[in-house]
Length: 116
Length: 113
Image (cartoon, rainbow over all chains, first blue to last red):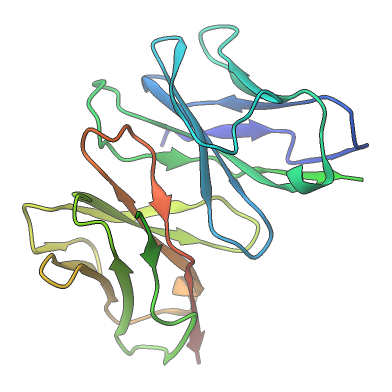
């Protein structure tokens, strides 16, 4: 069964450093997403991406964040200058092989980011 | 404003019993709802979804009920098994509001042997 994969599973970084989180969405999906979950809290939407551009972003997704689809399979989230409060589990998701809205979003296993 | 909340943070059931996990939402414009299961250290796993033109939808051992009048959603798990132990989240989406999901705070389901 196709699944979303993410690398690395864990990332430790120093405050102010740049990190890139990587995702391989399900191959025939057209919508890609990043969510995050601070420990003990609910999952929060960060950004959605469709047709090579951001389709929606939350207030959390400020200028320190960027997303990219560098090739036909990878989808990345970059945090330019990490802050302590960026420590969280970051989930990638994908949906919509047909490009239709409100299709099931399938989540990856997550990358646990710890900023020291 | 948008909010999705769960009534009970923890639910303990005996193995073999039925489980009912509840969720309240406040945005009447929400028209697509999803239940996810999250095991420790893993990503949310899709269980079942329902659109606002339906009141009930059944899957394998799971049923989702939607009451739009009181803005309430429930997940019923039949014959609960130890493997069902996890945190369950409801999430909502609004047609025309993009594809973002708004998640509730989660209910921890504990299955006792």
